[in-house]
Length: 102
Image 1 (tube, rainbow, N blue to C red):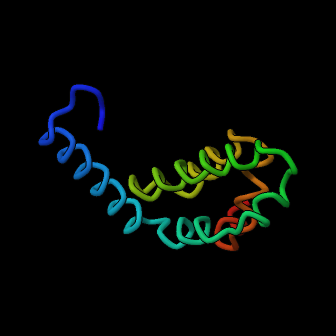
Image 2: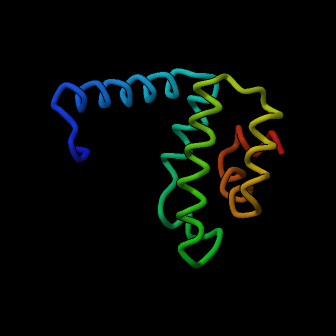
Image 3: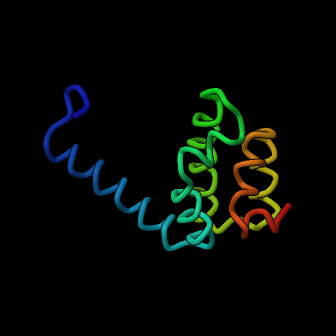
C-alpha cells in the first residue's frame, strides 16, 4: 500500500496494473515476452558474470512489454533494445524470434 492511499485507490491502482499486464500479454510480442520470462538465471548470467545482466534483463522485459502493449513495429523494438546496449542485445538474442530481428 502506498502511504496515504485508500483501499479504493489501491484497488484501482491494482486493476490498472492488471489491465496493463493483460494488454502486454495479448499484444504483438506476447510469445517473445513469454520466452524472455522463461529464461533461467543461468541463461541470464551467461551474458555477463555480474549483476548488470539482471538489471538490463529487467529493463528489457519492460521494453518488450511496452512494445507488445503498444504494438510497436519490429524496427522500433530493435532500436529500443539496441539503445539498452550489448547486454540487452545478447539477452534478446537468446529468444529465437527476437534474435531473428537482429
